[in-house]
Length: 132
Picture 1 (cartoon, rainbow, N blue to C red):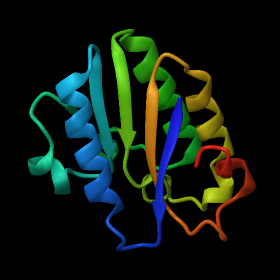
Picture 2 (picture 1 turned 120 degrees about the horizontal axis):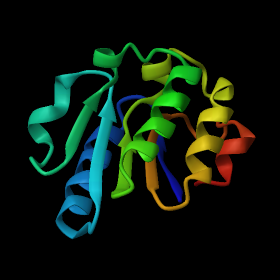
Picture 3 (picture 1 turned 120 degrees about the vertical axis):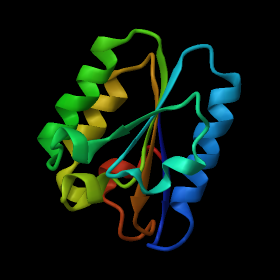
């Protein structure tokens, strides 16, 4: 399953995704991962959530993030939730260039993925609208 938290820059998406990750950690039967570019918000995340910082792994493109997501799923079958904050910031890409990342995540049906996307509904690429 794939879900989006979307809105313009500065609309509180990061706070929402952190709140959802912390809530998921309380009820999850499997592992909860929080993927973000850097350690900026790590103090707000529940200690039981595994934080992964893409800067530590040199993830800076759509292809490298897609491979990383597949690796996370393959490495641990107990992963239940993956929260990814700021996909465009992580990959240094426009949303329109990220279709392969979203398609790969959507194929991993045993994991719930939640992404933050800085976009209004009107500006969102068509392929993302089905996840709203």
